[in-house]
Length: 72
Length: 242
Image (cartoon, rainbow over all chains, first blue to last red; front, side, top):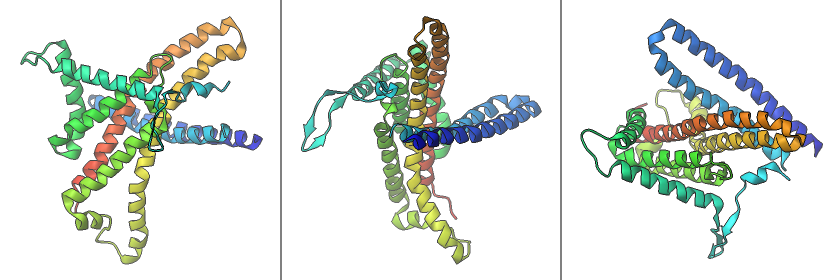
């Protein structure tokens, strides 16, 4: 039973690592885009938020797996 | 006691028809309340329409037009507006009702989101077949200008991507709303973990910020669900020539 908790911790940790990297890269590129073209700020922001929710969802899949493991 | 028991459904009216359990749970009642609010919202928004709209009519017009501006380029048919508007409203109002303390929104239950995603999947297939004919629709899974040995990999991939869509669609909505509520419960639960009143201000402030973020997430996730279903339905409606 203890292994399941370790597995859940590792799963959510690795997912958070990947998601953090992904959101970081995405936000950095969006900032670059806004700095280069400040007039496109609104559309860049909207598409950035939509893309961020897609990336976040991957971490949440890991959260679901972790919950399944931890509450088994 | 397990903290997630606050997010589970409780049977209020036990009901069983022909061996199928259709008991009315607290989440079903929240969904009915959400539908009631949607009806009120649109009824009073469109009761007395005028050229110079009052504030409420302005709100409803903005709500519908903003949604439609994003979806129209994908489905290219105005007949789909009521469907997507209803889908968006249902998810949004359910999510927003979850912000009231003690109320469990139906979207934290995977059965609700899975049902919606399954409906979207079926609509995608049926509409695609109806619009393009059964032969053209299934031939769209087969790209023309590639060698035969690549087709062995590509065609199963295309079919698999169709089948995986409802899973990702339902888990995305469910996990986002569930995670938000789990975080709020955990932050409140810190008071009981430390058994001290001094944690209370920190917990309360944290709760306020997380709740504000949850309102944002409620809008975004409702929009993402509607946008993706529009994308799936639109791509099977207007097949691209391969």
